[in-house]
Length: 136
Image 1 (cartoon, rainbow, N blue to C red):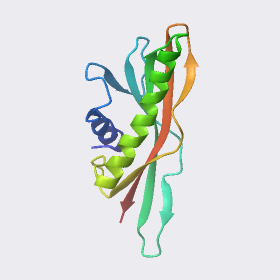
Image 2 (spheres, rainbow, N blue to C red):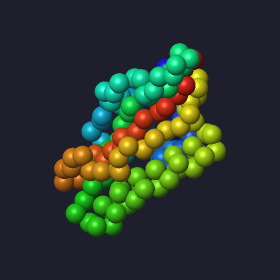
Image 3 (cartoon, rainbow, N blue to C red):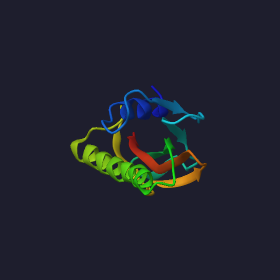
C-alpha cells in the first residue's frame, strides 16, 4: 500500500468526517461536502542517521470542500472542524494509532486549518501535515 493510500484509509476512520462524504485523492469536486488529500512537494528525507537509517517524511494536505455562507455560525463551524481534527490527530499520535506505513512514527500538523478560497455558497478549507516514518 502506498503512503497516500494508507493516509486515506487512516482518515476513513476519523469520527469527525461525514460518513456519506467522499475522500478523494488529488481531485477536488464541485459540490460540498467532500474531503481531499493531496501530496505536497517536500524533501522525502527528514533525518539521516550514521548507521544508515533514515527518517522519511511524506507531506500532504487534507482539505474540505464545505458549504460556505456569510453566516458567522457556518464560518465558525468550518473553522472549528480543523481545531477538532488537529486534536484528533494529536490524540492518535499519543495512542500510536497511525497510517499503516512501515515504521510510521507520527503525523505532524504543520498549519492551522485555513480558508483557501471561497465562493458565495462553498469554500475550500485545508490543513497541511506530514507523516514521519523510519526506514532502515
